[in-house]
Image (cartoon, rainbow, N blue to C red; front, side):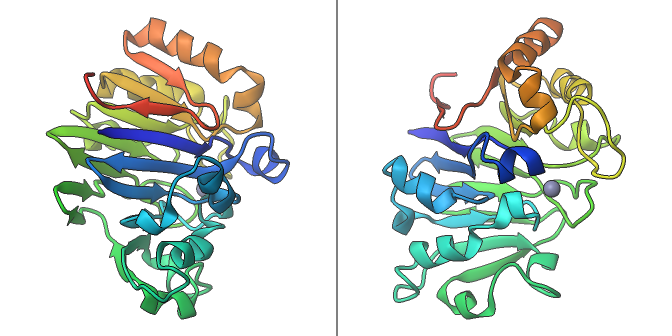
Length: 252
Ligand SMILES: [Zn+2]
């Protein structure tokens, strides 16, 4: 069984700070390997609300250090490791989450194995392979991932501005989760706008794409409606995630 459950689908300051959508990231179960990606504020609460078992996590991954992606990292490390009494799992993060002004606190580090992401890193957890194909363009060090399971590939495009090379890095994935914070570009905060996301989905051409991490602009424009428009334009099945949405990767 392989699926994803969205513990939160909010992104950007207004939506996350006001909790217009929850912000706990997403929880993958890939052939029994459990991975929590981007535990933003409320991840611990939402994991328990959905009766997931954080003590069964195999890995926690941060795409980057911004607080809407990393706020609950320390408490999730504690809960993954039974308050540190049962060291286990892996925490996979960019270097700037560990060094100056670290978001991963020093005292929790001995509880788990810390892995620093570099562009091109490949790691395996049992029969799941995870690669970090390209550093994206965002104000802090940021990496998406490609998770490989049962000879299927799921790509995650995190916060980034558009740049050539992004589509190529994710070519051939069967499923794609993509953060769509904004409708229009604001050069200062370096996010994809909806048109760029649509172009990426069109050129990557997965079997299914899931939009998430909506900022205020994207929420106001109705993510469901935008997903429908992108579907019509690209021919790809596109859905907009809701808090608590679960999507199976079987038989697709
Ligand atoms: Zn960010």
